[in-house]
Image (cartoon, rainbow, N blue to C red; front, side, top):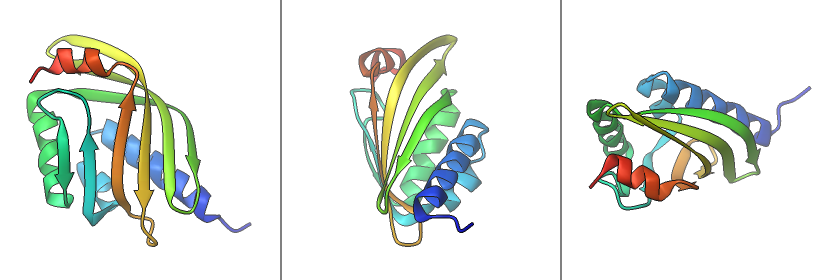
Length: 134
């Protein structure tokens, strides 16, 4: 049985989250287009838009250097020809404190299945911002 484009997107997405949770940045970056745009909302020191694979790599490096650890419990992944939506509970640990909340991650893929744009919406954005600081 042939794998549909949607099934392939879901499998790539699962692979990406698993790699991120394990700190395997190289595997995560393989899933990104060179011109990826990564949006971080809220009001923390990470808030902003990161343009290009190098900028996203540097952003991930900052997370790791700062000791922020995130783990994703994926509830569902929905996909069509251009979008992937991931519903999950994210647990963030930073400087000995932990918070959890529901997130909706929205991603756009190009024709080659590479991620070209990413947004996260969090039920606990204010708590995350307070935990992380500016």
